[in-house]
Image (cartoon, rainbow, N blue to C red; front, side, top):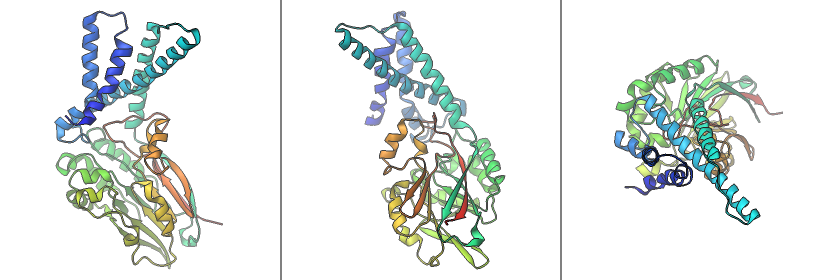
Length: 374
């Protein structure tokens, strides 16, 4: 068994030993609940057995939601129990005698974890609202004043985010009145055969200047070539280390894209901003699509005016975002000024179905309005 599945046993072991076992319950009931908790902790193993990948649980949507709720409640309960145990330790040190935790506090922690996890799953699976962001760009041609870019990212179309959800997202995106739509990776979780019907609604995405996109790391987990061909067949124009030029009269705006940092691990081309910008018109403002925000400083050095990224899901839960930021060069959610470049890291439109919880970090469909920098 891969070590990651053993690691996921830790929350169950801690909760069983510190929360469940001290309760005044019949032994048989504690054994049954303990077995259920150990089973829930192995959600990702069951996902792998269902599809061959931990990234694509192939259970009915209600089952995927139930697993996420139970797994989330388990993790949150472990964190609450750690807080209670630290409180016990402090009390014992101050009083210099052993302290006991009342059963009512244990039950309270269980109820709070279950409620918080239910709210988190509900937040995760909703169709996101439009978030408006204005970006000032130096040298923006007057013809592009007020130009609107709509960003979708981290859709993770899957059993959790199926065709009905994708259709609702497409309808909201189309109604947003943008000039161009961009998708910054992680379209899917699953193979083309698994997701063919679920991604079909993407064919209805439309904007005057088209729909442009890049791959995210998850596209490389499920036959990258097959997905690039299929997404292209749906009218999504891919920009892997490439660019397009949008024109308004004699004015120009460059929209460029790069591949994902995970690409070389499966023998595909690494992200290359220089290659993406080769042949781009000099002096035209550059909007770069890069799934991961980690290389933002490199993009800024290449003269990019605005970088749009995703990947982090905004950290998903307040507090956890600090850990996610450390793994992404300090970038996790929202707007950053990186030299002369604006970086925007979206919280994501969807979420990986392996940990689909959001607390204090709402999902979004982001509409950018470009303004001249005075």
